[in-house]
Length: 267
Ligand SMILES: Nc1ncnc2c1ncn2[C@@H]1O[C@H](COP(=O)(O)OP(=O)(O)O)[C@@H](O)[C@H]1O
Ligand SMILES: [Mg+2]
Image 1 (cartoon, protein in one colour):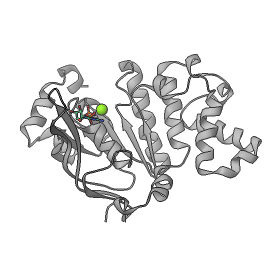
Image 2 (cartoon, protein in one colour; image 1 turned 90 degrees about the vertical axis):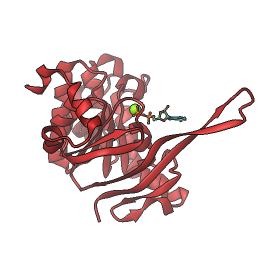
Image 3 (cartoon, rainbow, N blue to C red; image 1 turned 180 degrees about the horizontal axis):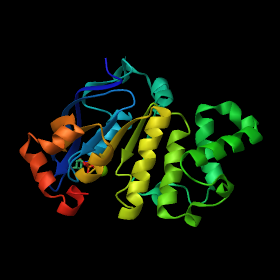
Image 4 (cartoon, rainbow, N blue to C red; image 1 turned 180 degrees about the vertical axis):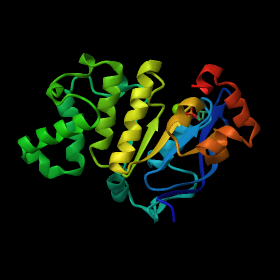
């Protein structure tokens, strides 16, 4: 069995139509997704806005209940877990979001943010301030930040540095899987590649397993081992990144590829 396995996962949202809310319909945000991810793999999940990428990610994290289907992590069926076990399991899944400024607490120093995240998994660290500070410093250096800045606040950093803080926070509880949902979409193009290189380095250093979500195929191509193309809640194409690029099988993938500016294709 693979490290993470999804079997025919459906996540639907009911929507009410009509003046009295009587007519209900459903949005099939995730409509029968099956996927496998191996340990230390980066899976690129790509598709246009609204195709269900974030819902799939929230479903994997057990933040959004699936209507049907199964999710296995290291062979354990997550759909059978009780709420206590889900709480514990949630530490195994950490997210990095598009906008670090919105996802970081502006009133907390980097130290407080990272210390809190570290103590989620290692409660005993609370009692050892010296050890906690050195762990925070280690985390900052791992993501390319100077540990001397740990008492600073998010607004004192650049956009790229803030995303590094968000990455460090995600790593703090030693997750088994990192779900990065459009992590570079809000950054300047010049900064994007720095963050992508950081994620690649972390995968190598920590054997990190990651789902990297983007609406931009050219970004996904840069770091994904395998690519899953999503359209209207379904995976319409899946394969090794190079093959999806050189020999796309699905018409929708070809459309996405055609939308990439030439200058990026030849880069
Ligand atoms: N909480 C929700 N309630 C109702 N509909 C939702 C909710 N979250 C997402 N959707 C709908 O599900 C579909 C997929 O959304 P989303 O997963 O955010 O797509 P993506 O991340 O690919 O842009 C969209 O049609 C969206 O409007
Ligand atoms: Mg999204």
